[in-house]
Image 1: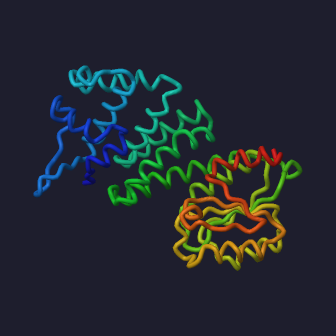
Image 2 (image 1 turned 135 degrees about the vertical axis):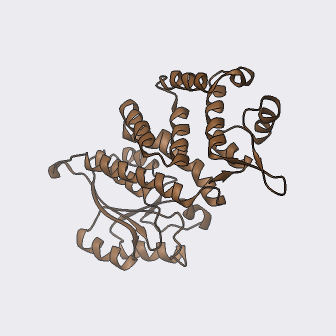
Image 3 (image 1 turned 90 degrees about the vertical axis):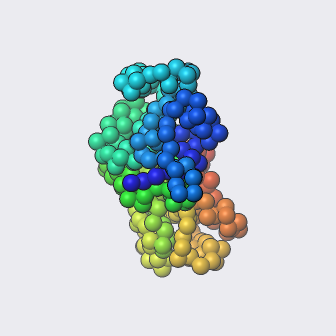
Length: 296
């Protein structure tokens, strides 16, 4: 059974740990377990209850009023909030719940609803990315089960691939040619897939090489296809011993292409970019790049 610290609850719910303790003591909203050393911990059921309570509280319900509600009343109020088309926090909380329970049906219901209301692109930017940021914090601290993380990211991956497949662009309407890849050891593919979607829906031609690609193989493909742009994301890149040398080699071997790079590792390593390279702060900045360069 997965357990969570009070800091995990703060990360997922957006409610400060100090406030959670007050809600426990004054209203009995949730009831933590205790380790042998008297440290609080919470199970999945307590987490799900806090998510519902925090959602009601953020939508104008006083905590004293929520504490008087039955579980059925809380569920009914949540349903009423879900009818608000602009309440994205509802869906983020729902995805956390689906992850904790490994509930694919719940996940599908949320994504079906958000895709209908917002479209796939806004769903990714306004709901999926904030959700992934929250669980990323837990992943780094080891607070979530790897099976839970794999479950939810694989479902998002499937939905992204389906969205890509649903976009049809006649060959004669293609704009610039992009090669997309992740370097050796880099396995975080969701953002690269979303970049594929963003480019395809904007009628750019994409050659998708996926994750864990040796640089020599990238260079071979690019020598044949001569892409206008090469796009990659560096999140951890454990098999790249020196990022500066790697970026220099990639840019030199593909000097006729514009190299578009993003990912947290670039900022952490403080890389100096060659003249044919461009750094984007995030994949979502790719949309602005396309607009600014008049490619769409």
